[in-house]
Length: 294
Ligand code: SF4
Ligand code: SF4
Image 1: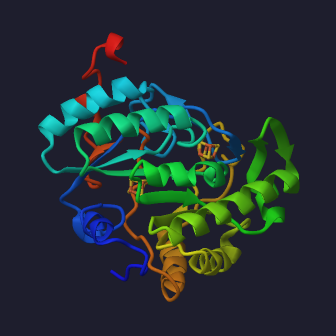
Image 2: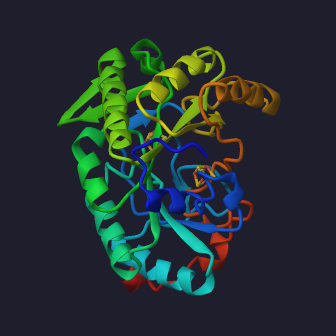
């Protein structure tokens, strides 16, 4: 792996045991704690589902936990999974649109185990505001979803953006979101945080322009990109959009890999996923804490 020069030795070592950042780390487990239900933007491909036991994709969870509930569940999981190395906040909404809950959960887990790798994923809208605090909290792995760098395309992907008390639509909303994503990415990368950029490949909308996105995020310091196929979720604005084939996806990844490290093994996990990437065993831990602990 080629790490940016700002990366500390500790972050490099932790990255070798992070199953998403390092494809060789498949024996290690991650746990997503679903403490972030709200979101501050509206992506046309989003359909968040709670209490869903059968569906496996981002935004789906069978429960939303308080920071204390998530901590109690973490203690149960850690006891059973000695290979647990990563705790992530990946929704079901946006980690930073629920910053107080995200922060509290991280603090509780850090207090128990300062060596645990903590990562978050975000749409990036609030990164300029919270990036420094994330660093202070010991977060060294951040995923930002950046689907385009063009506000015109952004206006077709994002229905609205809620920023500083205002709902912004069209290119105006998209522009603020895209500016903040790149600002946050540049800042975090310059401080030694490894940023993975997720890009949802939407056929006919942003697919042709993804290599430009990869170039731009590389320039801003991204460590790797993870191009993922659109899941046309039922009930979302994009439910009738075309599917992306594995061949199309891998061809685009291969092309972009000439510029920047690519992730080929993403499982598009649930917001409450637990275990190794190859086997989500979150079902075994459902109801593992009593309601009053949540
Ligand atoms: Fe849904 Fe995530 Fe988009 Fe928010 S950022 S609307 S949770 S897909
Ligand atoms: Fe890793 Fe992809 Fe799952 Fe996120 S969605 S935890 S990047 S495999």
